Length: 312
Ligand code: NDP
Image (cartoon, rainbow, N blue to C red; front, side, top):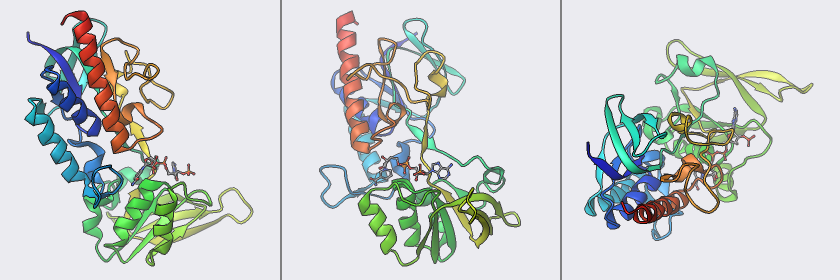
């Protein structure tokens, strides 16, 4: 059976940057794209903070360019999800789509993170019928309608602003009395005439006959001013952060309590020599395209050095 020098799992900025560096280093990397080819950036709109794009770009464009750049140097990019791994022996074994076993001398885990949900039953009940975690993907369906976005960070503000450009009205449901988002995003939200920020509100449930028609909220929860309110909405968008996609690796790879893969010091190496983690799956702090790309680059350089040291 063919043993790969370098297997890369995930195709966001971390995975594809690793693929560019690994292919240019002659490692003939094979990439499995994962659940969301191109990663989370394909769900964002404008990217204004990636160096080198003075006029900004879009997430989809950037990921297409990275894909082409990796393919240009010979990286093989395939559809497929890592469903099982065995990192107890070398070469490492990764099973793709419960069917194909792939053997590799080094593995770069760049599986990113996925949107979090509140955990209320109605999110399941109305999934695809008014509940979404991706404004860019689904916003189009809510043109001239009223929607709510939950969360107070940059994700929620970005979703709210995007939806505000399409919708009649956007509620931003924030559990504290402040936004966590960067100042520039906060200002844009406050300046948008059709965004109403509901500070100190939490979602109790959603209402509607088959599709979302409203939300029941609680205001000032746990205080003597606590009260329940109802808002009429057509769509309910989650913007409350992300969960690292590390579950399949956990039997072998050390993570923190939240599931972020732990790397050694300034390196991208995990607790196992020859296995590296890059991008959001290992980064609870920065979570930017540029930092993901940087760690993907580091992981590929470390894989190349490891292989050279081992004479592989
Ligand atoms: P954050 O963790 O920054 O924010 C999550 C938000 O959701 C917080 O306001 C949090 O509230 C709220 N929240 C979490 N859980 C719940 C819950 N159960 N119920 C209600 N509210 C909840 O995540 P983001 O995804 O917004 O951002 C992550 C990182 O990515 C940040 O560093 C951000 O700057 C970056 N980012 C940058 C963008 C850009 O530059 N364009 C775009 C998107 C993200 P609380 O504040 O009370 O904890």
